[in-house]
Amino acid sequence: ALEVTPTLLTMVCHNIVLDEYLLGVTALVTIGQQTLFFIIAAYFEFDKVTDFAGGTNFTLVAVLTFVLSGSYYPRQILVTAASALWGVRLSLYLLMRIIKIGKDDRFDDKKRGFSLEFAAFWVVQAIWVFVV
Image (cartoon, rainbow, N blue to C red; front, side, top):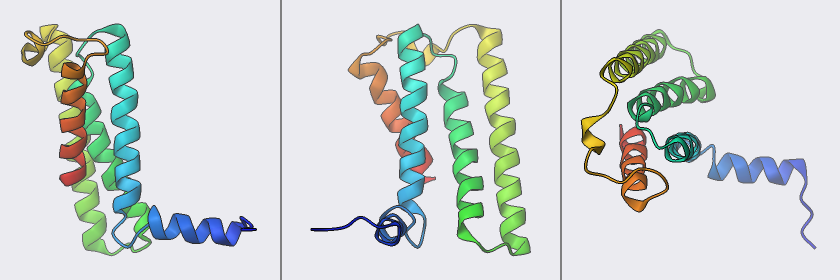
């Protein structure tokens, strides 16, 4: 019988989720955050959090991968700080803009709620966050 020990679990997580480039953890965090925001937006049938979700996800991934990398050279600190500040600024700007405008024109001809059409936007956004 295969015994699941903390050592085995740690090795599996480290090799699959915490790979050398942290792509596994980046994918899991991105899928998790985009799914959470999709559920919220679909349930309440609004589109005010779409860009905020993308920007904050980008920022979260930048900071998380920096921390998990375990190396803190000045260049990494500067690039991560600049990326995080950009992400926070952009997210807040887009959130305030959509609150002021009241709606997102990109979704005028699309069905909201738990539809494939609305979900497709979130899938594309998750891909964007992961790739960038």
